[in-house]
Structure formats: C-alpha cells, structure tokens
Length: 226
Image (cartoon, rainbow, N blue to C red; front, side):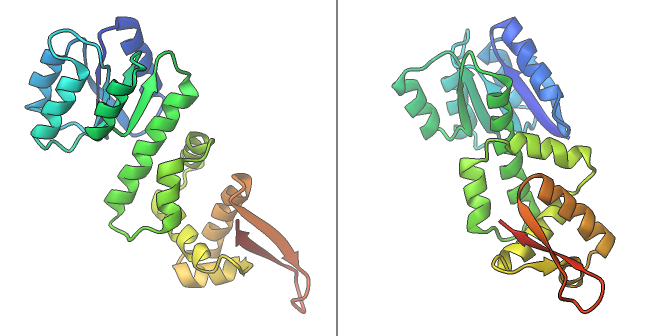
C-alpha cells in the first residue's frame, strides 16, 4: 500500500480529501495533521510516499515544510492543495518539486487527476522498464479521463504490467493491424488473455479493430493502436 499523509488545518477539507483518497485502491491515509510542526515530527520518523499539503498552516507553513522535506532529501511526492492563488506561492512550490498544485475549491475530478499523475509516475519508476515518449506525454499531459481509465482497469482485474507489455508491443508496430495470435506470440500471453485486454483497449478508445475476411477461412479480428 502507498502511504499517504494529509496536512490540512481545515478539518472539513482534511476529511473530504481523506474520503477522496479512500476511493482509490492502493492508497492508504496513515495520518492526518492540522499543523506543519506535528506533520514534520511524524515525517522525520516515518517513510511516506505521498503528501497532500496545504500552504497556510500554523507553526510551520506548507512551503516551509516542503523546504524541510527537500533539504532532508526525503523521497516524498507532494500535491499542494491550497487557497493560495498568487504567482509567488505557485512559483516557489514548483521550484521545490511539487507534483501538482490544486487551488481550492476544486472538484473531485481534478483531485483524481492529480492522484492519477502520481500513480502513473510511481508505476513508471517502479517498473524498471525503459519508457517511451508516449509514456512521458501521458505523465506530463494526462488524458482527461485518466483516472476513469485507471478505475476501469482495476474494476476489470487488469494488471499494469500486462497493459504495459501489450501497449509497448503495439506501439512498436503502431502502423499495423495485428491479430490476437500475433500479439500472443510476441508477448508470451495466452490468446484468451490478449482478447480480454483488447476488449478493454477498445472500450477506452485506445485501440480500433476490424474484421479481416481475406483469411481463406474463418474471419479474423485485427487490432491497431490509435
């Protein structure tokens, strides 16, 4: 489980952010703090992967806490959630390496996109596999329905590694229509598994399909990545 800490002085906002995170499989809110000082004492002794951080807080501000985290070289990703919309605060937060900056009030969809960006970055780094330009573009830009796609993947019991394996092979041959047999032979996956993942890719508009009647026998379905 990915450990998440919320640092937010507004009790209601902290509770809402926690509810948002609890909707996402694989994330666990291990602590919530309402001032920067208590959060810093906790972070000094506990490894945390993701921090949801407000800017304006008692004792130690969000930016001061972020500076301490960077000076200590803790490998913690930070999503800033704040009412501060001045250029100076944004500029400083970006220089301190935040992953995203959400201005209150925001909708759940925007919050979920920030989490989706973190999950994608985490997956790319942990996979140990060389990334493509398309992977980087996905991380930086993120599709509007990125979080919905992630939820669809999880609800269908799909595996990130398998999705990545199939995508990588199809991107290598992005100008060709491929059969499930070809994809199976080059990925080592069973044809049944390939067809199940193709159905997902088609539903998410990532792949198009056509029926090839020129096989001399039973028609064959072919797939092409968009």
